Amino acid sequence: VSASKLLSGSVATDILADSAVTARKNKTSSYVQNANDAAVVSVSNSLVSLSPLNITIPAADVPVATKALVMFQARCVPSVYMAIVFHVFVDGASVQMTDSYPNANQMLIFPMHHIATLSASVPHEISIKWSTALGSGTATCWDRRLSVILLGQ
Image (tube, rainbow, N blue to C red; front, top):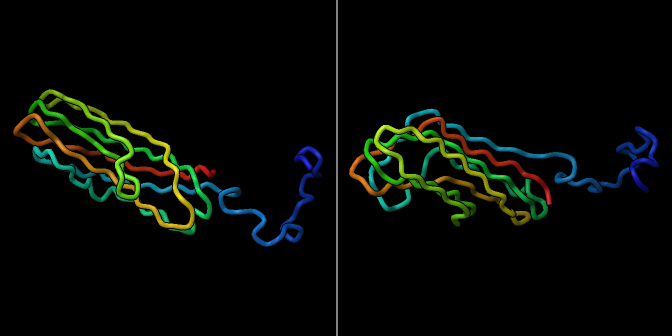
């Protein structure tokens, strides 16, 4: 039966079997973490968590394997010419990275997005880590935003 053959309002909740309409079919969940403080990282080749940009997705929000759109952005300015590297982590694994080599005091905007598949019925952790290299200064980043939108199967 296609939607065009149903009279508007003819399918009410008393007609539907329990659990017939799953959460992934009737809503989209989204999670956002913002940080407007100026985060500073010193020169380092090791990845450092970009706190507080960590999102936990509860298992109840992922009843079936689900696609998720992960987005991150930040504005950064280094004190010297250096590489600034951002990594998006999903459940502890790096799924995307971006880097740039701005000159001293040059502001860059880092936009990132990634489609991840989240397995069913377990919680998921989404986080951002960063590092710098090629210089002996610091980089300051602000207007940082991590967003996750559950898209369904």
